[in-house]
Image (cartoon, rainbow, N blue to C red; front, side, top):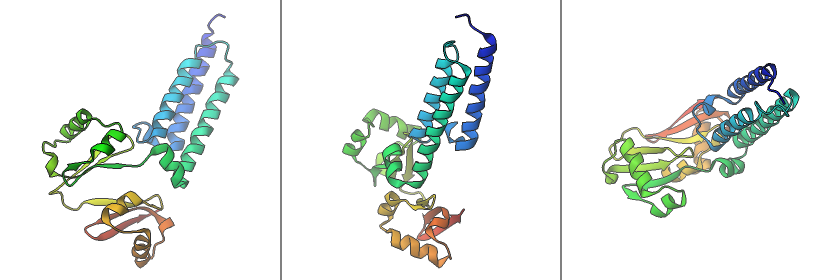
Length: 209
């Protein structure tokens, strides 16, 4: 079938519109992906647009419907991730403390696919030359390493994220959900009201929606 430049232009336009819609609808994190969903959203959307634009057997309606279906799937996945902790852990995983007080958790590093070479490279990127000076190194869901040094002051522990207690951080500071709720109540806030709360130098600093 002969390539129709009119159809090609329309498909490009529709693909561009859907990309803009997804960026504005789901937030701009997919521009600089921070989670598995962001990465998948970009890969699949790019694959759909790139793979179907030049296929003349796929009509404009079919092309649009596929983009609509993928947008709906991403919307549902994002919604469940933001409102269901179990789904969030399954899809995005959780941050892992790879280094604690200068000691590497080798088993955990290997379990998460982080080789000694990769760990050394990430530490060098952050300007760390002596692992013994690392108080905490967290392997984030997006593959980045967040490092806290021994001499670092005013360390922030994000104990509440999007109205939900971050139990990984709570374990680190040795507190529980009841303690968080009590601290928030002292400031006239409920857990569901809190967008972000950090634990800094023994105090809870919370930001409401």
